[in-house]
Structures are given as structure tokens and as C-alpha cells.
Length: 566
Image (spheres, helix red, strand yellow):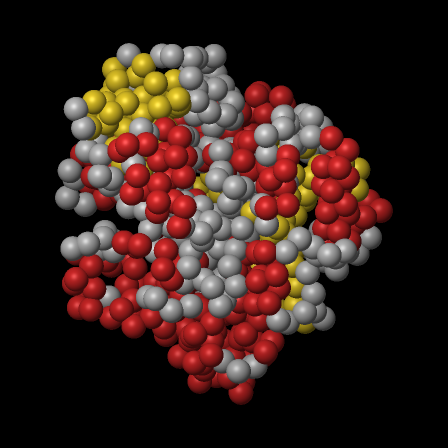
């Protein structure tokens, strides 16, 4: 079979690249090793409860937002809707006995912080001036983080030149003294997984600014993102193949020429986009003699830490207890930096010191569940190393020691969750624990890395993996290239499509931003849920299903096959 472009992996980067290329008139085939599309944006069902392990909120979906522009420009509005998290507290930060609610809007955030810490007013002004300046520089420079365009950075991005190779801690040291305020400003570090002493300041700044205008959750779960992209891709003649693991990338006469699947089938193409991690692309899919330099770079690169996940359902009336759609970040004490440093390299020693908890059924009213139960997703960081002794074993066959470790860690997470939802341990009606090996199996991650390469100062931009490669016709996208997260990975896919098509601007690959994307208030379902449910049911009757054994299986059906986590 022949295509213009074959895309390896159906994460947000790969699907964005595929859809943008299809919009430009290309014949595109996406091949995915998993039986669920979406990479970290997939959803699965366990015991009748729906969970989404990699998407907890997305920013820049308000009017004029960059992600809204992307989704509308890709033609996804008919199949994709969002619920807006609590505008008065999209993130609830619980640090020891203190709590701070992060509101929507920069002016509100700065005013709330200044009211709480009036003695740090001047420092807060300086801190956010740098953070917002860095974010603005990054938005302007587009592809200028690659040589030789990087030579123009002093003129185009002065904040990036001054602070680009420094950490968040460097900025905190220059502006903020109050220990609790420093902890609050570091508390969203779970969005990149690094301590303030380790994270590149531009990455932390871009994440902070990404959520300044609110947080949003896909109605129906994370799976709605890849499902909307797949439907749009199929309307344009593109294909998505599941359970289609790539054995190797074909290189003929010095350039990429397609892929060979594990079953032996050859898919020929003029271009290949790899949404697989570079460690897999260079370490497994390409001939060693062509990639010695890149393999050395992979060995030198530091990867982000991994996750321990607990998915559960509880029989509690959480809304009447005062909980809402905002995410909860809990830390045992105010030395948040030290907590992240420990989590990156040490397993919990009897208790978890940091936890992210999100109540999916409050973020997404109408979220599929059983009875009046609420579904909750909890995450803490753990290193991959202690799990490597089971790396070569099969899911469900790892033995009693593995199961005991997994459940012991799950107990520690639930104990920490008592600090957020008192009584939760007695109200759990379902629980499943997932380890870093789960990430490896279901998301084809490298050593369980939650965010691809670690976003330290010396692993960004031209020092990271580029969209283009030394092999003509081969391109990369995903969390280890431009940036991580749904937005970062998606933009990397759009950049790959721009390179392939030769478009002058990424915007040239998108349709109009017409304001058609629908957003509803998560905490006021009485205003919209009933009418939208009727409209969605009517719309579904008119939409051609995406089910096809050789193409893509509807995630609402196949998700039930995931009866147990690794």
C-alpha cells in the first residue's frame, strides 16, 4: 500500500500531523500499536467506570485561545466539546494546613496572591513580568529555537535570552522570599514533573500561562479528542490502523520510504512522521548504522519521571461536601521543591508526600459511571528503576511481589487522599493501581516517562530532538520534541506537517477560527446538561461510526476490554 505520509503513533502529535496533512490533500495512514487510539489521550473502562489517565485539564480554549484556534481550524467542533473547570479555583493547592485556590485570569490571580502576601507585592510583580514575558517570547519565535534561526533570538526574544537557560528556582530566588508563597508558585510543578531547581524556566512559564485563562476538560473524557480527530481524518480519506506495531522504518537511497509492520506488511510513503519517542524511533525502528549519533544522544538524555496512578470510584456525595470541578494538589509540607526532588529519585517510604487528585465526574457532568458513584483519578511520581526487574514479564503474570508492591503503594496514595477527601478510604467501591510498567505497555513510553524527556534547561529547543531529522523524509513530533502535554505535542505535530508541505505558516494548514467550539460550565450542569444530552444523541444518529476492524475501533466499545491494569 502507498500513502503520501505514514504517521507512527496516534497520540495528539501524530493525529494533529495526520489531520493537517490530510487537509492539505495528502493521503495519510496512521499506525498505532495499541488497540485504543490516542496515546496519553486515550480513555479506558474498568468495571463499568471510565478513566482518562493522561488528560486532566487543557488551557487556552477560551475565545482567542491557541488550542481553541487549533481545534476549530482542524474542523473538530462538531465532535468535540469541553467543560470549563471552576473559574474561581481551577487548581486547589493544599500545602500542609494551608490552601490556595488558583482562579481564572491573570489579574485575579495576581490580586489574590498579593492580598494573601502583601509583603511580596513587588516580588510578585517582577516574577510574573518575567513569566509572561517568556511565554510571549515563546509564542513569537515559533521555529526559531533551531539553528541557524536561533542567532536572531537576542532581538526577537530578549526574555528568553536572559532566562532561557535558567530554572524556576533562579527566578524565585531573585523575586520571592516567603516560603509558603514559593511553595504555591511551585505547586503546579506536577504539570512537568520537575522541582523548581531542575525545571527550565521557559517550560514552567509556558505552563503557568497556558492555564491563566482557565482550565477545560473534554466532555465525554479524553477519548473524545482522538475520536474527533479520527472522524475528521476519515472524512478526508485518511486511515487509522490499530494493533499495527511498526517493526522498522524503511530507508531507501538515504531517505525515509515508509514502514514495515510486525506482520510483514509494507506501507510505502514519501514521508514518515514518528510520534514514537526518539528512544524508540532511533533505538528500535531505524538501522543502527544510520543513527549512531542519535543513539548517543538518547543515552545522554534524561527522561522525565514516571507515575503511579490510582483509579477509583467512591460512594460519596462529593458536591455536597464542598468539592467541585477544580483539580486538587496536595503536599505534606511547604518545601515543595524538596518533595519533587525526592519523588523523582526515591520510592515513597511508608507515606506519599505529594498527590494530584481529580474528580472526573465533577469535571464532566454526565460522565459514564454506575449509580451515583463518583470516579476519581490520583497520581504521584515514582522512579521507573524499582520496577525494571519486572520489565520483561507479561501483564497479569508479574507475580506476588509485584502485586504486593503495587497495592502497598496504592494504600499510601489513598491514605494521602484522606487529606483532600476525609473518609475516602471507607467509601471506595472500586480501585485499580497502575505502575510505570503500565505506561510502558499501553502508551509505549520510554522507561515509563510521563512527559518524554525531562524539561531541564539543557534539554530544550536546539538541545532537544528536532522536528526534522538527518534522514530526508523523516520527521518527529511528540513530548520529547517541542514540548509535552496535549497542547505541546499537538503543536509539534502541526510543525511536522508544515515542514512536509512547505507551508509558510502553521496557520496555513488550518481552517478558520469560527468560534464554533462549545464550552459549558462544569459546576452548573443544570443550565445545559439535559439539552446537550438530547442534542448529542440526535447527532450521534447521523454520524458514521468509526468502527472498522482494520481501521479504527470505536473507543467506547473496545475500552471495556481493559478489565485490569498492568
